[in-house]
Length: 288
Length: 268
Image 1 (cartoon, rainbow over the protein chains, first blue to last red):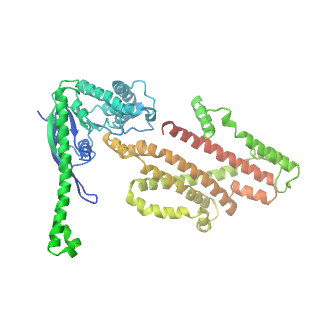
Image 2: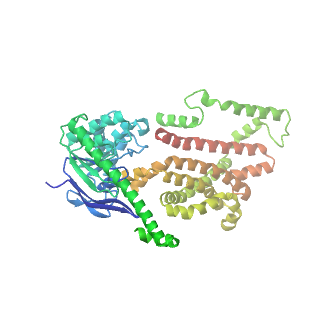
Image 3: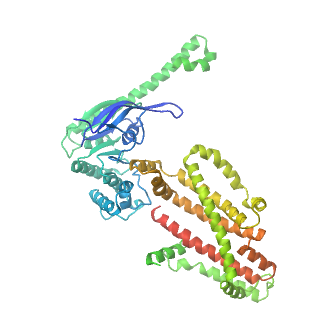
């Protein structure tokens, strides 16, 4: 079966000042209707990866394909739920949900109807005329989810969508997202640093390494839904992923340390050779 | 006027005072009345010569007569039109520049220091040059008013643009907004609280400049009217004109800017 979304050797470098290697040949596929979670050490480039899938950023090499076609800009069938909600404070709840449809030039009456339908789906029927500032964090994210769904995307991307919400509300919202996934059969890609969340929602978890991020492991999750966090398999899986990530952090640590040692070693060598006076000039060459 | 609009107007008229507290929102009337009473008493008692300060009641009589006289109203309109033209000019130049400065760092670093330098100069110091170039007339008045209005609009809008969360640009991109919609439906509303306070400041500054120019260069507005009447000894007319300016300035400030700001206060 052809993948719905496919990442093919996606690499990303940033050239602002120092060259930063964010992603290194990341490849994996997402099947239609699948829920994929992406986890990785903090700062590894998870969000960059999601931005590239969303078409908000372009890869330095490799490509992201949606239904076989390369993505170079946001696609109308791929929607995004933002970490800090990304709502327009001057628009009411209803107007925020309508926004995507408005940009697609859907007639006002039709987009009202559609927006109300999705507000109902996220449990915000009757909040139409409230402004975002009048809502709690959890409710704001519900608006964010309704807005992402209202454009009837095939793929819903979620960027740390539950991380700016208190834990109890986030728990409820995760259950609802799981329901929406089940009901709509849409493809979901969630970036998160919360391992339990990743396992609870996903059909498979993509574990990334520390920077530059590579795919370290892809772990299928075959537990029955709704998922029980105290289930032995769940606990084991959580422990395994945690172990992988800890390993990554240790690797990074050792790498930094080794780099430090090699620099010290080269200084030592130069001192031994009596070249200390030229240290500032030669150090660059020796350590590279 | 619809009920909604009347309510909005009423709200805007009382904002800045103790809104919600019905009696509280009219407390400011009492010290004002006290001032007028003291003024009347002092002048009637002859403590201040009438060639320096006329009685309050005589000013009121002249005021009510003046606002029914066409030349007087025309002079106010004249000043007001110069002011509005100046502000429109300031707005149309400052808005795009400030928007670029707020979004393009290189542009900001290149031009904002120069604009700051000019902003630090007292605006009126340019007046003799403007009169030399454009003559002592409406053109100079309009340009001066636009100069006065430019800086507050430029700096507030630049600040507002810099403060737009980057995430909102991603939102417009994800939902495939074109450049025009991004500007009208995201950038403009996002900077509107800054823009409104900039416009309000610009309006206040421009009034001062307009009156000063009219007095200095005899442009036939209400400033010139005050100057002429005070010089020829008809102090009542001078005061009546000051009252009229105060009323126009305050009503526009409250009704226009007040309602704009009450819109932003609903969501910001």
